[in-house]
Length: 280
Image 1: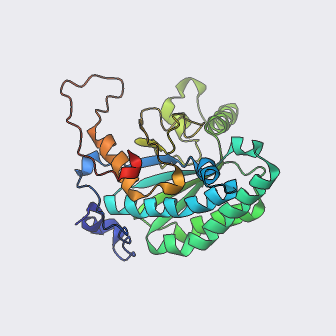
Image 2: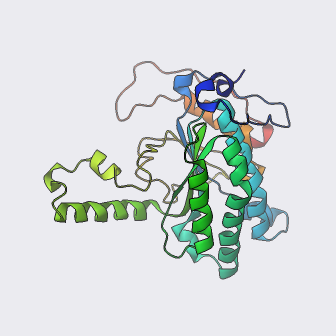
Image 3: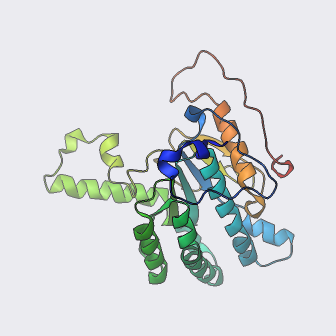
């Protein structure tokens, strides 16, 4: 029985996650060692397509099933929040053709998957800037947020037209306005004060920062929230990624000593790996 099965308080009445086609089951990790918030940079779509002689857009299409398999796996394991980097503020530098595809693709994925997410008890949130985004993309994101706002099984934060520096700058600007209007004392601004002005302050800090494809970079993703995150980089390209790789990353996370700048006297033995061959 998975931790998701045992957590009936938050999942009652929702469709349970579908089992993986391989029959794989989530690792039995102690609840306190399961990451509450996992941020995912879904990298490698373009390289996956290039290796197969396909257009880059085909890699993006193939990556959709990877994300939704990971969501099912997160529900099985008992993860509370998944943040998916769907479109960054830097992605506007790509070709006009790819940008048009990504705008339409993100809109259609949200529209196509909204009912499925709702049935699973997933609460959808959107982080990012409105500027330059297609109105139809904004509309679909807002509709998904409204439909799923009371769901409690898992929070899925779609980061669309998102940049970590832009988010912090926006928060600083809002703080400056509040101080100028006399709403806050500038001498009493703390880290927690600024955090309240971020896009989704109630979602909180990242526990596990996961990136596919072997690249080892932040890529301007959740810079504030990931200050004390554990980082796991897997070589698997995103379209080949599934919940087994996600679980493997969570096992690695569970084996780490989170020190938050302090010292831990007793090292923790690494957790056993259930990773599929593709992740090695």
